[in-house]
Image (tube, rainbow, N blue to C red; front, side):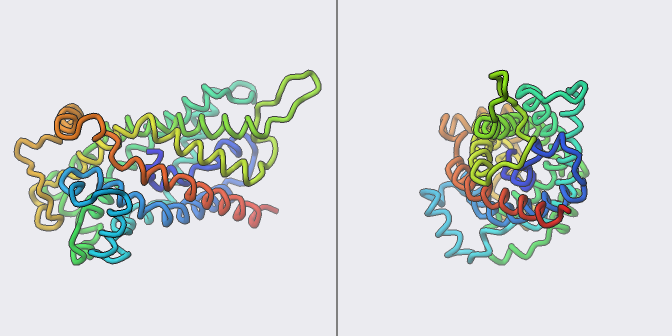
Length: 326
């Protein structure tokens, strides 16, 4: 979810700001895609560490976030931090376009006669967008996680297409959508993400009006970059905190390898009596072996990446919009 970070989350900045304005959609799409790619390149190493810490078979190898970074670089070189980036990078443009369309659709569906959306409507639209996105995010993140869990540097050459073919051959299309429900629940966090972004931007930019009230539409003018940075940071944190435990559940479910791919990924998780076969069984087993803290494994690198990723994404987004706007 919000971000996993996934490439979806890190390219959402500014959507609400331009949801009401009649801007060239091509400009929106190009700026959002470029910003998303830059954000993804910054965020992916942190995401790899998060996935490793959440995987019960690999987490014992790392004592801390910093130890995980240094160990991966030492054993797998710097490129090891970017394992699994091909899948989200290749689909970033398409995902961005769908995010723009679905979010604006759900937002406008609640609005009447051009009124300014309330924060409740913003949260609802974000949550609906997240659930819709989960159908695309699930197979992409499944492949990404499988590749990120490959320890040996030689296995990094296993292509995305080979993994897709192997999983589909053994389990059909259903195998590529393992963890769909967990992903949809996690991505409800887009509601909190958009709520945090819009609430913060309105707080810092809402100007007073003559009758003493305030205008709550943050899209009525360009915001200073420092406001964008703060709003993005708040959004990133709020988007992750409520649903992060479900991200752990999703990662553990998707880290489970089908029998046919065992030789590729070297996973020790067995598919016989697999404790991570469903959401409920994953929650129970995770709590039994790790306690409550197990549902927050990998939270530190996730929050650490939020600020620099959002700063870079906002800066690139605004720069590209400025260059392409007449």
